[in-house]
Length: 313
Image (cartoon, rainbow, N blue to C red; front, side, top):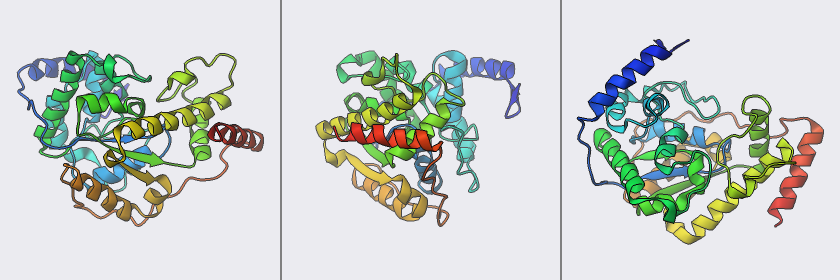
């Protein structure tokens, strides 16, 4: 099957060749700017937030090319794929504020980087404590981000929701890391995960808190409600430890209804905290807000009941 004009075999051969090229690339060893990470449960509006930033604020990032290199080689090629993505100009058009379960079109576009970070963290979905990050893992992550930043000449910006369970681990590697927490009505988030789980991802989707490891005897509906709650609980706990100065909260509703204003808030937060940022392109006036019941009535009321019970804890 061809993907963006490439067959899987052509892709594999290309990345094997790029692997050789990567070995001769020399990347920066020190970060110049504070890296910024979006955190939230999956389906909370993180992709749209990242696309708003990608369009309006120049940043560096791991691209879909970096993710594809992870898929074919079992490891990312951050330097050569950053150079290729930069030549592509990000590969995002104004009309492309859409995604497919977090995946955006365009090889040069910012990636949902689960497989990229999994190479260093040795875990795709679960939490990672800072003490479990070895010096070798930390060095690999740091050098990859520093090299990416150097190629673009811009602050690094990343959206990978599994990192919501690794905030202190990220701060261990990047002591000046910044975090943008995207908030959405938990009932809307849970419904969106539920629809994905019952159509495309039957086993699991995204960040998996340790409280959700044992799902035996639990319905998919109960699983997704607990996932949303425990991811947000983990963020709150880690946020309290790291400190509020490293966090900015944005709301999915505001990103949809006031994208220009929210992009300005994000840029101001980054700029004030060691990540020079400014808006270079205007955004659409608004995006469609997804809100309200998306599942059948009985499921909707059961989700609301479970979430109310969890959040009252």
